Length: 190
Image (cartoon, rainbow, N blue to C red; front, side, top):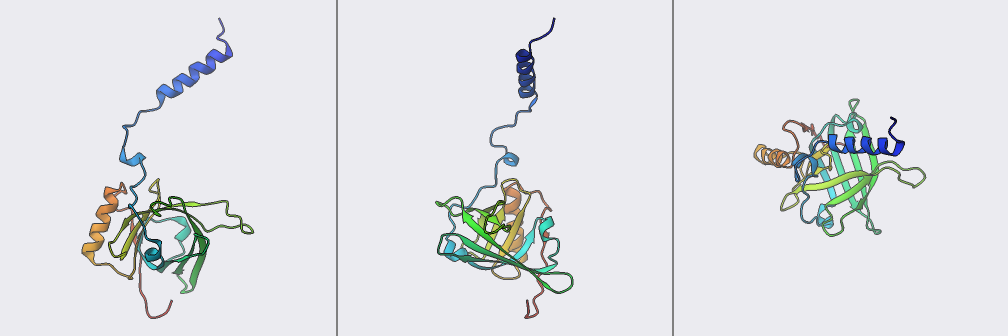
């Protein structure tokens, strides 16, 4: 006896639903990192030095002196200027645009570095998940934890502060050792 097409589809759908493993509610690896309660964008704007990052393909050319500069715009968006030094000593500069996704906290943004005649089809996740009381450092992550950055207002942080930041990142679900330090070797030039 042949099973009708609708019944077969229903059984396949039911089997697929049953086969999906259940994950406990609130499992840290499935929920995004917790963002800070509020980011004062005026204080956040300005120059930041990259202290460490989760290695990623779009920064492979950056071997040292990585910075990010945020400039507030009149339209409520933020210009993002990323700079770094390449192996040959030349500067790599990329300009992007950020828009605020959560206007209550200002801690969740989307950033785009790709534009076609002013149209930006690709936006990346940018979440401020840690912030110093005096905005001396910031931890930035993504919902899936594939990307992350430690930023600071100075090119270096003390070992004790850095250890505390790595602990915060682990508490937020980033695996130990997932961040690689960024070489900052300023000699008075960019």
